Amino acid sequence: MISSVLAIGGAILGATTIAGLLMAYQVRQAGDLAHSQGAIFAADAGVECCLYAVYKGGGSCTGQQSTITLEDGASALVSCYDNSNNLTDCNSSAASALSVGTSINAKRAFLINF
Image (tube, rainbow, N blue to C red; front, side, top):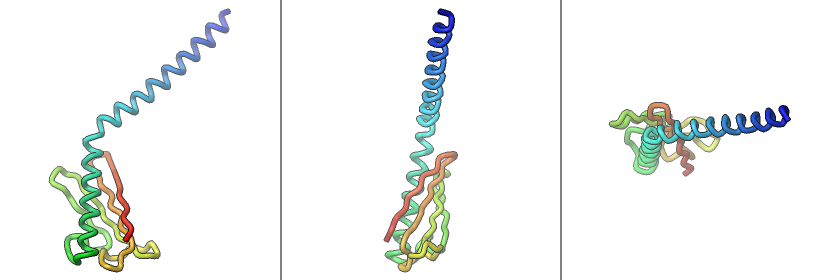
């Protein structure tokens, strides 16, 4: 009788511990929503800058790696690659671009292939 009560109590304690841990992760993720949104907007701005450099020529994303800083403090690091996945200038010879947006602790990335 005592061992069955201990086994059931241990199972309930384990289940509540796991549920509490999962809830803590969800609360932290919900609190980071604003920073995640800022990182997504920064990554999108990096993609737009790269598209302008590739199709129109010039702009602020013409090097191999460029950094864009938005007014709210979020930033994006834009890297352009050729067909062999080597860093190249963001111009008409670029085959793909990776834009990593950062806002406080949140990082989001977009990859675009030409």
